[in-house]
Length: 82
Image 1 (tube, rainbow, N blue to C red):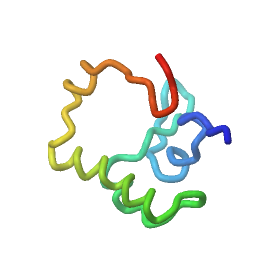
Image 2 (cartoon, rainbow, N blue to C red):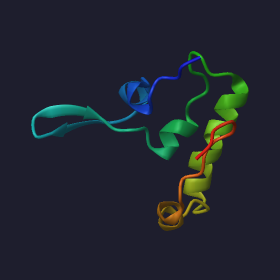
Image 3 (cartoon, one colour):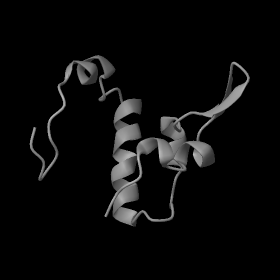
Image 4 (spheres, rainbow, N blue to C red):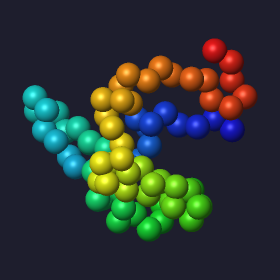
C-alpha cells in the first residue's frame, strides 16, 4: 500500500498554524502541544496515536536533541536496502 508523502498529509492543514509567506498561505506542521492534544485521527489506530505522542513528549522534555538529529545519517528502513 502506497503512503502519501508527509506534505500530502492533512495534519498541517487541520492542526498546524497557517502562516502568510510572501502573500501565500502555508500550513506549518503542528507544534508539540498541538500533537499531544490529538486524541484521534482518521486512519490512525489508538496505538499509532500513542506512538505519535512519544515524539512531542520527548521534544518538550528536552530528550529530543535537534543538533544530534541533524548529525545523524539516514538509515534504510525495515525491508529496504541502501
